[in-house]
Structures are given as structure tokens and as C-alpha cells.
Length: 85
Ligand SMILES: [Zn+2]
Image 1 (cartoon, protein in one colour):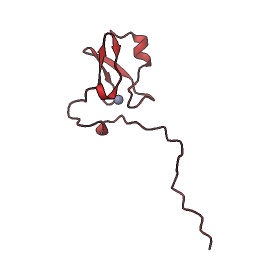
Image 2 (cartoon, protein in one colour; image 1 turned 135 degrees about the vertical axis):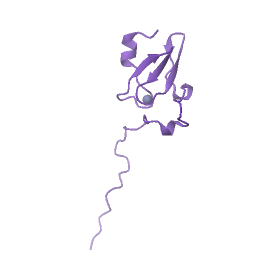
Image 3 (tube, protein in one colour; image 1 turned 45 degrees about the horizontal axis):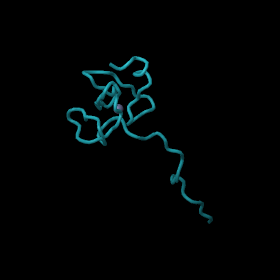
Image 4 (cartoon, helix red, strand yellow; image 1 turned 45 degrees about the vertical axis):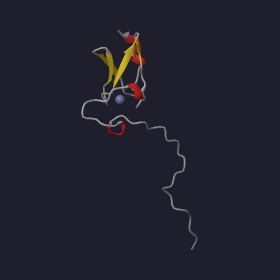
């Protein structure tokens, strides 16, 4: 069993900003992308590579949770360089 206090702070590693996990059938399931993380010896293994993909999902790239949101303005290219007439 995972303690409620621990569950409270656990997040899906694919999208750690806000997605929570719930315990289900001895595993932790992401409430958003439904990745299933194993629990070994009472400790959740929040490793994407060890997680089980939800049915119908073939690749991590198809999940609603994605690793992003940490863009820090590197190489912004939406502004054309100044052109002098
Ligand atoms: Zn997720």
C-alpha cells in the first residue's frame, strides 16, 4: 500500500507539473495518460521505461502526458531579423 501522504506528492514523470497518480490493482496509474507504474516492495517505481502503456497505446509519444513545459526561451526564432531598407 502507498500512503496517502506519498500519493499526494507523486506525479507522473511524463508530466510532473500537475498530473496525479492513483493506486489501482497494486500499481500506480496516471490519471491523465494512464501509464501504469509498478510498485516494488512498497515503493512506486516511477520510471517511464518500466511503466506499462495503457491499452491501445503503442508509444509514449501517443500519450496525453508529454515531457514539456520547461522551455526557457532558448533560440526563439519567431522574429525575423531586422532588415534595413
Ligand atoms: Zn501521465
